[in-house]
Image 1 (cartoon, rainbow, N blue to C red):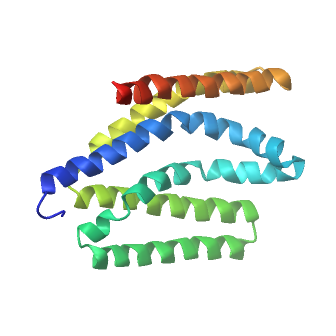
Image 2: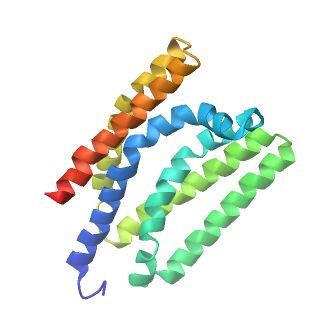
Length: 196
């Protein structure tokens, strides 16, 4: 399928990437800035450290969504051998990061090293999939960048709550404003356009 319809396949991969980015990346900073508060609020005060760990994992998580949606591209393009060596290298990289953190005996450093190695591996995998599909990653990067800027605009209320140290009900209202802004943006830019 990929060989016979290279042009259509390229458009297909590009469309999947762009739609996923437009759907999820406007939430990036809203999620990043709110995880430290939301996780303990949902699960309890003992989960404060987990909220911090979740914050570290944000970039990894967002690129993982793109990667999971395009993972079968490797099979369709018959690049299984190359993909195996790439995945083996990343497995070794993540193992070394984990072992180094354990050796140094610092839990936070271990998580940061492992998440950094995992983020690097997933970003390179996303680039690799776009490369073998002959989709310009610069175009995808531009889409990510523009949607991250949109996300930053949605997160301004949350940033202001940190700057002015707003707590309690007012902080909850600020989070609600950011999330409702995002839902409105998705409705106007994706759902309404799809209906038309």
